[in-house]
Amino acid sequence: MATATAAAAAAAVSSPAAPRAAATARRGFVTFGGGASRSSPALRPGRGLSGVRTHVAAVEQAVAKDATKLDAPVVIVTGASRGIGKAIALALGKAGCKVLVNYARSSKEAEDVAKEIEAAGGEAITFGGDVSKEADVDSMMKAALDKWGTIDVLVNNAGITRDTLLMRMKKSQWQDVIDLNLTAVFLCTQAVTKVMMKKKKGIIINIASVVGVTGNVGQANYSAAKAGVIGFTKTVAREYASRNIIVNAVAPGYIASDMTAELGEDLMKKLVTTIPLGRLGEPEEVAGLVEFLALNPAANYITGQVLTIDGGMVM
Ligand code: NAP
Image (cartoon, rainbow, N blue to C red):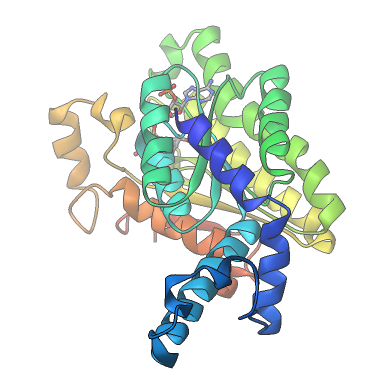
């Protein structure tokens, strides 16, 4: 349903009349004599000039809205059905972006995210796929390109944990975590840079973790992957700076989500005592930082950085 609604919205904004109307509005031309205006109630005799002005203002507003939609950034958020990814997709969608909501298994949750974006006036499609698999990544990029013709922002968010001490860690626990938390970031970034290089513009935001900086008992696999993401971010930022592709990492501390809920209440209580601000972060707080990096022109001169958002854990 979300996809169908988004398709209808895209058809509306991509209709040949919309760009013409937008261009007309930009130039400040408003036609009083013909077309739809002629039958408008505001122009019927007896309405007076103020009625006409109100009508013109309403038309200008509608046209400006269509023009804004045409220019809206296209964003891919991996792992956007739950937790931090969901908050990021919602924040960017509600800010006016066209959002591809990726998920692995939670199709219902992903559809709900897309519906919430559409209810707020945005556009969204869902895409079920494992971003650690090259074929799925290629199909995901194609889905966004088929729908919107470009990709402006990639948020590499999908991640998993398989925590255990190194002495007990199975190769599969190591590999699963590396595959999604690091290899998927490589695959999605490489695929999207092909599009961004051509337009000489793009923004990539990788969700790392403070444990990629500090290490953490029981997370040799996860901290290695996240440290890899940080090194990868800096390298890609250097390689693509001349193409105006901006690449940063966001490194959250402990954020309230299904991932941290897995740790159990007792451990969480202990962990909270190590956080100077004395509480877990909220997914919306991480989403606010990502929104700043993705959309705020004040972030245009930030690249190759790791921004921690952790209640003061790492300082
Ligand atoms: P979460 O609540 O467990 O959500 C994980 C998301 O990733 C879900 O949308 C899930 O989709 C998706 N996903 C899982 N496997 C996937 C795959 N193979 N392909 C595509 N999507 C997949 O996790 P979270 O806490 O929001 O974490 C999000 C990111 O922040 C991760 O990179 C994590 O490492 C990082 N992070 C989290 C914290 C924290 O405290 N929560 C701290 C630092 C960093 P399904 O719903 O379909 O499974």
